[in-house]
Image 1 (cartoon, rainbow, N blue to C red):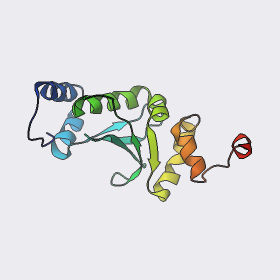
Image 2: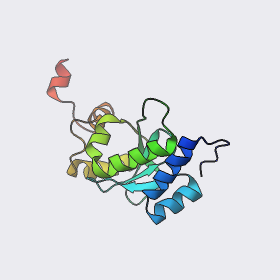
Image 3: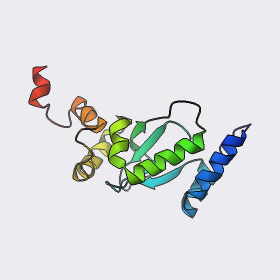
Image 4: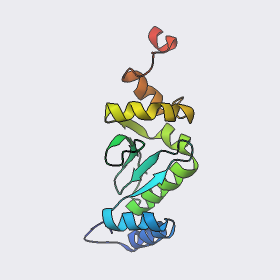
Length: 149
């Protein structure tokens, strides 16, 4: 599945658990590409989850280019399929929690600007890493409290 030359028993169990918790289309994507797509619980935006630490946020209607990535990973030697399943469940059931902890990096400005209104309506921009990233990139006015410091 991930083209690793070796697999420990824990990695094989993690792969079975991941496959058991994915839909048929997600399993097909995982088998074919090594990643799968998940829809966010609040924003209904599409995320691409792969075996690496970065989770792609895809702009609506554009599946080839990410609007940005979220970087979050577990401490310790957790098998990649377990981390992928954790990301998937977290995004589906507590997208705000995921966005508040993961480090966000916007990529393509055109795609990022298109996703901002959706994220605002879902309430994902306030109090999360989105907010800090948006202020740094000049998407929003700097709050008065930030100007004083």
